[in-house]
Structure formats: structure tokens, C-alpha cells
Length: 180
View 1 (cartoon, helix red, strand yellow):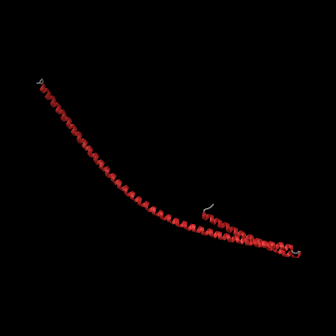
View 2 (spheres, one colour):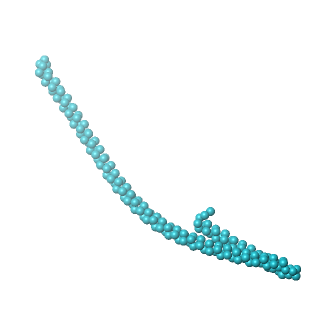
View 3 (tube, one colour):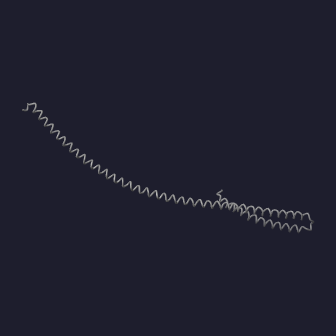
């Protein structure tokens, strides 16, 4: 019987079917394995997605808190800026007042110096006219000279005080204006 071609084909056909069943069983086992791996991968992805969503919510909360903090700091900075502007206006007003006071004081000082210079000029003219007078008036000239020296000493002291006051006022104006 082994010579029969039909039988031989049937045997080969049965062997092929057995090989196909074996291959199909292997494919089904591999498919089951892949499904198991896919399910495990999906579970891992789902866990990762849940973790990412939690981190996203946490970051969003931190961002909102940070924005609120920045807004509060901005409001504080704006209040400080308004305070600084008010102080600057007061400083500028004080500077203008000081400058006005300085120029008034400077004008007074100039007038006083000019008055003293005129007085000294008058004293000098009086001394000159005393020199023209006879020799008997030498004592009067000496007395006028001593008075002039006393007046000059007094004037020098007054001018020194005024000069120091002018320098002090100039220094204050420089400090206020920020000039070197």
C-alpha cells in the first residue's frame, strides 16, 4: 500500500495538517503571550499616566501659588515706588526751599560786606583827610587808625564767619543736588 500514490498524498496531507495544527498552537500561544505583555504594558502606561496627572496637578498648584506670591510682591513694590515718589517730591521741595534760603542769605551777606566796605572806605577817607590836617591832629589820626584796625579785625572775623557759613550752605546745596 505504500505504493499507492493517493495514500502517499494522504499521509503527506495528514503530516502537513499535523504540522499546521502544531504551528497554529504555537501561534495561539505566542498570541496569548503577546496579549499578556500588551495588558502588562497597558497597565504600566496607565500607572504612568496617573502619576503624570498627579505631578501635573501638583505643578499647577505650585504655579498658581507662585503667581499669587509674585502678584503680592508686585503690589508691595508698587506701594514702595509710590512712597519713594512722595519722598522725592518732598526732597525736591526741600531742595528748592534751601536754594531760595541760600540765595537770600547770600544776598544779605553781600549787602553786609558792601556796607562794611563802604564804612571802611569812609574811615580810610577820614584818615586821609586827617593826614592833611596839621601835625597837631596826629593823635586823632592814630586813634582813627587804631579804630580802623579794630574795625578791620572785627570785619575780618565777621567775613570769616560769613565765609564759613557760605561754604556750609554751598556744601548743603551740593549734598542736596548731588553735585560734586
